[in-house]
Length: 507
Image 1 (cartoon, rainbow, N blue to C red):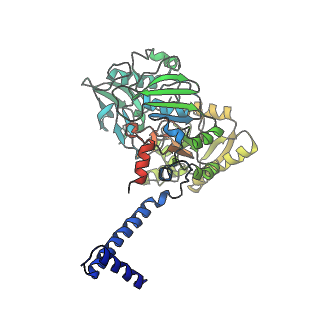
Image 2 (cartoon, rainbow, N blue to C red):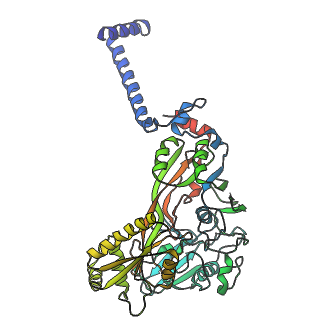
Image 3 (cartoon, rainbow, N blue to C red):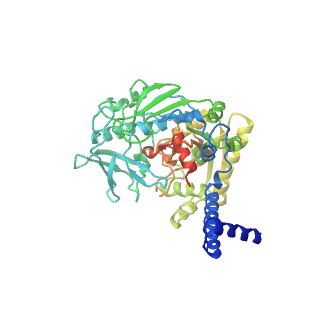
C-alpha cells in the first residue's frame, strides 16, 4: 500500500507539477483526502436517521429518502386535506364536540387567549390581562384590529354575550356547568376592557375557561333565556379566525383563508373517512393530516408510512373520577378541602398538611364509588378493575370504600342530580359533565372536584410535505380531544417536489 501511494505521488509530481518537490505534493494530497473524508463522514451522520425510509422506483431517491411523500400529495399544492372520524353537525364553539368540528372551530373563531403546551396563557383576541386575586377580578384588554369575517370589529359586547350564553340556565351544550367559578362578565372602565368576576378568588384563575371562541352578538342574536336555540346548523358560522367556511356538508367541510391573513395554506378540506379507509388513503397520498388511535395495529403499520411524521400523544379523555361538588346537607363531604384531598389521593398526587388533615377527617366513614357496569361481562370486568385501582388508593389512605356498578341511565341520572359521593364517569360523546365540574390541573384549583382519570393514546399522522406543524396536546382544553394541530397554522410551510429535491441534495 505504501509503495503504491509513493508511485501515485511521484506520478502527480512529475506529470502535473514538474519541478515541485515530492513531499509538498504528498502533503497536499493528504490534506485533500482528509477534507474529503471529513465531508463524507459528516454527510453520512446527517442523513443516517432517514436511511430507514423506503424509496420507490421512478422518483429521485434523495427526495424519497427525505420524505417518502407520494406524488399524489404534491398535486394539492396549497390545499391541505384532513381525514376525520365523525360527521359534521354544527360549527359553533358552544355546541361543537366532534373531532373535525372542534379543529375547524379553532380556525374559524378566536378566543380571548389560548394555552401553550405548558398550559401558560397566550394572547389571541386579548392583548393583555391582569388578575386581582383579592377582589376576584380578571380584566382583559382586547386588540382593536381583529374583525369578524363579515367585516365588523370584535368588541367587548361580543365577549359579554358569549360568556353570558355559557352562564345562562338555558344553555344546554357540552360546556354546561363548567363555568361555575365565574359570577359575571361586564364591560370595564375603558372601551377595550372586559372584566370577569370570579366567585372563589383562587390564587390563579383557571385560564382554560377563557379559550372559548367568541361569537358576534349581532349575528347570533337570541334571548339569553333561549340559548339552546343557538344549537342550529342553519346559523352560518361567523368568527374572527383566519379561516371562513365556503362549503359545509355532513361528510365534508371546506375552509378558506380570509383575505389579509398570512400563511402558506389557502384551503383546508375536512373529509369524513371510515377507519379502514384512512390507512389506504395515507399510502396513496390522499390525506395530509389524520388523528388516529395509537394502538398495536397502528404501531405495526407505522414503518410503512414513510412519507409521514407520526406524533404520538395522550390527551383524549376516556373517563373522569368525580367527587360530588354539590352534596346534600347530610353528606360527609362538605368542604372543598375534603373534595380536593380525595381527588389528589385518587390521582396518586401528594397532599399538603392541610389536605392530609382534611382527608383524615373522612376516615372511618363509608363511601360508595359508582362506576359504569358496561354492556357485557367483559366491559364490566374492565370497568370494575379500573374503579378498584382508585378505590385501592383511597382505602390505603384509611377510607372505607365500596363499589357499585350501574347501567348507563342510572349512572347518568346520579351524575346529573349530584346523587353520589364518588364516581367514575365515562366521557360521553359530547363530553358533557355534571354542573359545577372543575377539572384538576396545574396549578391546582382549590375547588377542583374532577380528575381526568383515563386518557387514550393517539397519534397525529402528518404528511412530510407540511413543515413546522405545531402539535399542542392541550390546545383545546375544554373538549375531550384536548390536542390540536391548528396552533400557529400561519407558520406551516408547504414543500413542493422541487423544494424537497433541493433539500435532499444540499449538504
